[in-house]
Image (cartoon, rainbow, N blue to C red):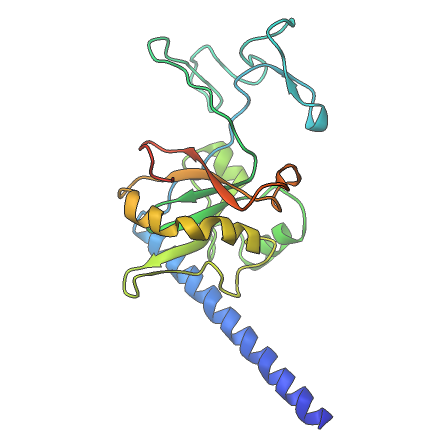
Length: 239
């Protein structure tokens, strides 16, 4: 009986491994199709702070109007208009809008796919696995060439995609998704919005957003799973 039980467990484990490999290959193939079709968006770049600040990490804070040094962040940014990757030249003829930024998990969505931004410079087991098993420009990952900062730091991971033949979103909860890359709470944030991405985002538009969940960031433990729109050129496409 024990031998039969072990054989059954071994068979189940083998089947799980095969299914995981099948899903992984399917994800890589889909990423390749999107890339060849020019449908992989530019990776959202991380910019320097626009306003002056003090401290780092837990001590970080913006300098208040009543303090010396209040104003634009001239320490890190070239606000003179010179051509550089960190230059910011505000247009005095246009209004400047300040919005609240909720810190969650940075994602990007088109009407055909959803991507998660990965920091390839971050430490940890997941980064090691990406570099040893896939590496830059291989498999499911894609390094954007749109910004030297983004290209050297960030990678895009294909979270899920819309399959025209089946008429369904695929890949969100497939077994090849590592828990460290696409945890359950992130999938919970994204899933309710998939059909809205498909129905409301025009071709060529990428919606950048922060997925906010009480288990993604400790400060949001009192909230239900939610998704917070970050940037879009078209109103109401991610709500």
